[in-house]
Image (tube, rainbow, N blue to C red):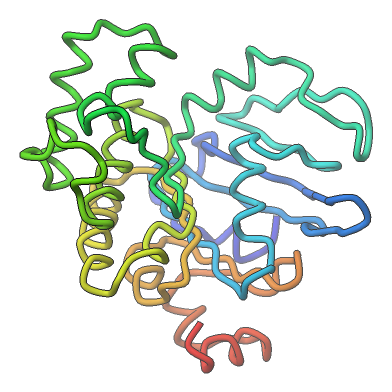
Length: 268
């Protein structure tokens, strides 16, 4: 663990087990090594933002956290439980599918491209996973789904089809869908980058409100203002390594790395 990671806000988390913990994570696509030994900790109730240039490994790291991608080396823990692996290197895969399912259902991911089912209403989209995956009672799930749609500001769109909504509304529906799983952490992969600036602010407002509630979140973003506003800790990745990390005030206000200074001066 780096000194900066140890310095994460520790008022109520020193003795708590992190929601996500990553040690020496390596990820390759064939001969291309994308992640080259990443360490990261996401304590309960903290927002961790991942920033860096395109190709730095941000989204790959997020997908490895959620076990959507297999990593070739390193430890991934969810609430202290280490992912079990079989095989080595490019042949390494999770050994326990039930464990993978359990972890994924507790780490809801919001993608850049909404990924709503076009043949379902917004309400049906939000209800689908809790009913089919978690086998929850549909009546209870519907009540929760409507609450979350209200929470993200589109309660009146429950019976609409995705194609009838703006991009910002669709992304807010995707956030409501993630929330309806009632996960231990939310993972956002560039949630505003596909949106026009005006619609982007709708989604930013929702993410800020979730951060204020103390939800555990991992946020891959190109929006430095958003990262500065909502994060407890920011990690700057460069070519698959952690170049610099720390509290947002220090990272954005007094960057130590020449690469980070260059990245910020270029506008992120």
